[in-house]
Length: 197
Image (cartoon, rainbow, N blue to C red; front, top):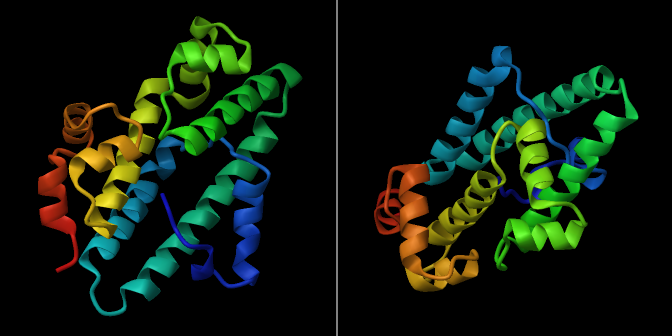
C-alpha cells in the first residue's frame, strides 16, 4: 500500500514511526480481524479508484483506521511473541529480507541472489519466509511488483512494456501473466477499468 505521509496530521504520524521507521514488521492478522482488514483495504481501493467527491477525506479516515488496527496487532503480537530470542531472530531475518524486497523489487531478485546477499541457504530462506509470513517469498515479490504496476497503470501513461521493466519483470508477458493471476485483469483492462476519467 502506497500513501503520502502528508495525509496524516502530526499527531497521527506516530503510527508511521511505530510501524515503519523501526520496522519493517511482519504482522499476522488473526481470523477474528481478517474480514475487517479486508474490508478496510477494499474500501480504500474503491475510494482511490472511484475518486468521487470527498474521496480524500474518506481515504484518510480509512487509512488512519488501518494504521491504528495494524499498530494494535503489532503491539499485541510483540507481547505474545517475546518468548524467545530465537523466534525474534527469525522474524528479524525475514523483516530484513522484506525490507530488501520492498526497496529493490525493480531489480532482478531470486532466491540465489537473496541467499548470497543475506548469507543464508536458499532452502532456509524459503522455509523461514513461509513460517514467519504464511506465504511464499515469490508470491510476496510478485504482490509487491503487481501493486507497483497497478499504481503506475493508474497514475501514469507509461506503456505496459516500460511498466514491466520498471517493476522488475524481464518482459511484459511475465507481467501480464502474474498481473492477471493476482488481480483477475490484464494490465490494459485494469487501466481501462480503474483509471480516473
